[in-house]
Image (cartoon, rainbow, N blue to C red; front, top):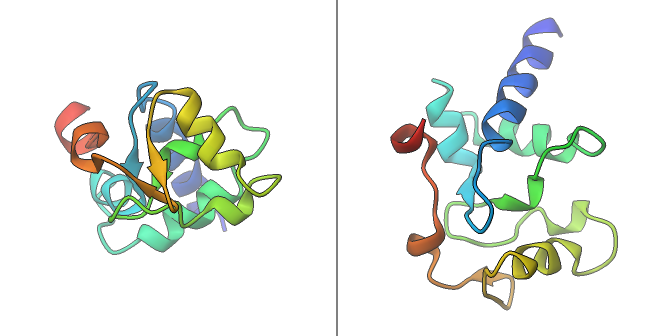
Length: 108
C-alpha cells in the first residue's frame, strides 16, 4: 500500500505543475513517472485528489475527453473549471486539444 500512496503523491506533484489554461492526459503523467502502462492508476489518483489542492480538472484522457467528469460535484463542474481557464469544451471534448496539451515529459 505504501507504493500506491507514494505513486499517488508523485502523480499529485506532476498535476500541480500543469499550467493554468493547459491540460495533460492520464497517460502522459504515467509515462513521465516511468509507469507508461499505469494511466488507470493516474485516474484513480485524480479521483482521490479532492481536498489535496490538485487541479484534477486539467487531467483528461488521451483524446481530450472529460472522462473523469463524473467524479466532480455537479454535472458540469469539470467543464466549467476548464472553461474558466479559457479552454473550449464541446460535447465533453476539449477543442484544439493539441494546442492546449501540456506534456510533462517535454516540460519537466
